Length: 227
Image (cartoon, rainbow, N blue to C red; front, side):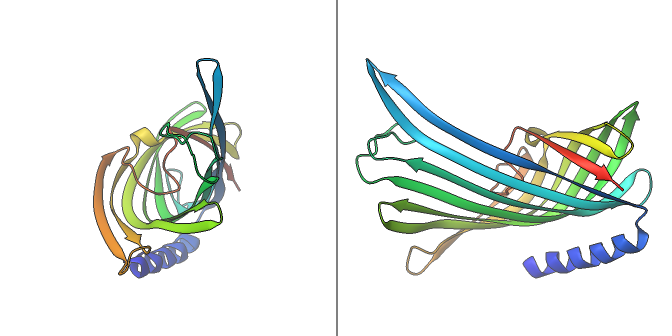
């Protein structure tokens, strides 16, 4: 399945370049960090420290005034650190060594977008794509590092986007993962067992909970620059 989607993406890119009328570049950058603490009586307890970074560039070509095709990629890094004596996200206390959980996510998605309605500087768009993605995780306790189950998935999706034209070339776009319709399949592989184990699940519906780097934010703000 992975090879079929990659071949489809290559054919898609070739056809796009032949028929392109206008190039556009876009995407979003997300940075998230948080630290927690809680009070119990007169004592303050420190909790986990979380840090995350996502980069999701996209490139596309308008074939006419309404229809565009392109490619979007995504990379995500995230970590959660719980020092000795601090509490975990579930509220239990870490009585052992310092604990760190980290993850790496990626995605490649060819897409089609269609301008549905334009009112003054606002436009309502619908974007759909067929993508593949993966996610790997590991945790470290003291000096010991263990791989957690990894995920590979593929799926179809459709996402409404609200666009505001700052100028003829620059637009600001807002979308919500809550309104994203997706259908696909994920496979989880656990290499820590012998032999390794696999499990699969199918998802379908609005706001589908997947391991894709392009999911997980209630709202996403990005920019598009036309050439």
